[in-house]
Image 1 (cartoon, rainbow, N blue to C red):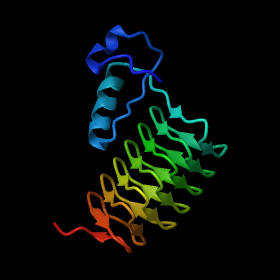
Image 2: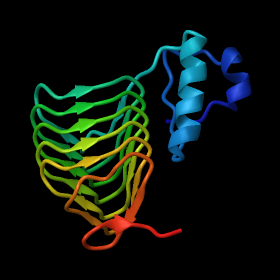
Image 3: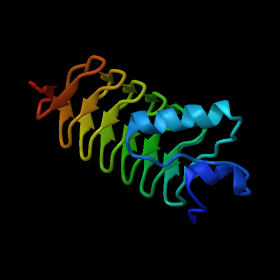
Length: 162
């Protein structure tokens, strides 16, 4: 899709709907919320090589990239990025404004909170949760629930000492 102009020129651009494609979750949420208050209509951009099971619910303004697989009974919140080649098994719940990075894999019945990031190549084991605005580092393996606002790294994933 062509980029038609800067955000401050959006009012001058004929359009049916928008999608916010910014990698930083907080920045993407802020822009989404501002545009929503202005009455913008959001679409989901879904690559034709993504596989989405019947009955999956995907909120408005999401990006679903090539090679993504989402299995049955999953719910994806608004303004979420499902990046290249990530997989979500059955009954996942992904909060709004989250980002599941390339090659990340989520087992069945995983919950990812609002604004959370599951990093490149990370794994979240079945029935685990990642709290709101948490970060799962690249390549990490989540075997225990991750509280809100925490960054975890490693195998098994442990809180990052700062």
